[in-house]
Image 1 (cartoon, rainbow, N blue to C red):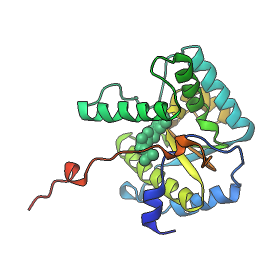
Image 2: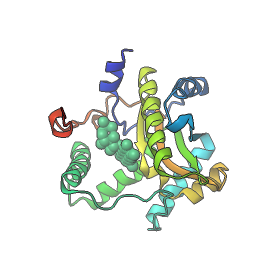
Image 3: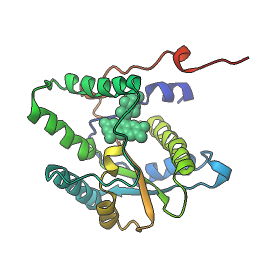
Length: 221
Ligand SMILES: Cc1cc2nc3c(=O)[nH]c(=O)nc-3n(C[C@H](O)[C@H](O)[C@H](O)COP(=O)(O)O)c2cc1C
């Protein structure tokens, strides 16, 4: 697959088929993704790949804690406020997703059902958790996690798989560490849901917007 095609066709997948992803395919992705750049070649990342019973336990925990209204305790603070333009874009994506699913603003049950779907990672049979060690600072390792995360998503796209990067998978890291035997000195930065997309589901073909290039590139001579 052409790089340009992978870049343009990658999109967040919000409904997966239950079919498992072969371990060899996931490992092929990591074998290539490890060539991602990082600060001073420190390669600060560590990944935990959850499937089967372990993943189901994480899904059950995530759902139970959310339904119980347990306060989020992420290892990396989730943003609550954005500058206005960003907030508008953030609100817009939520609106497009719910509208596509036919969920009206006042339909609390419908919205809850969608959020529950998100908290069970949209049915993905595989969840990759990107971690860094607590010994390290957060800032540049976060940057490097971003680089390798996009590389993973593009490689997955190239293999006919779909992904959704999920902050929602990093809400209750202490419980996830326990279930997945992730050492306590690892910070869980983000999740990547991985699987085969349900292509016919309209949620996987929502209209997405981007700024015009001239809005965010300043050319300085
Ligand atoms: C760090 C990060 C966290 C994200 N967390 C979530 C999430 O919790 N739930 C979700 O539905 N999408 C999540 N996304 C996906 C974004 O909403 C998505 O990338 C954005 O709307 C652009 O759409 P696209 O990926 O289809 O191009 C996340 C993306 C990133 C980069």
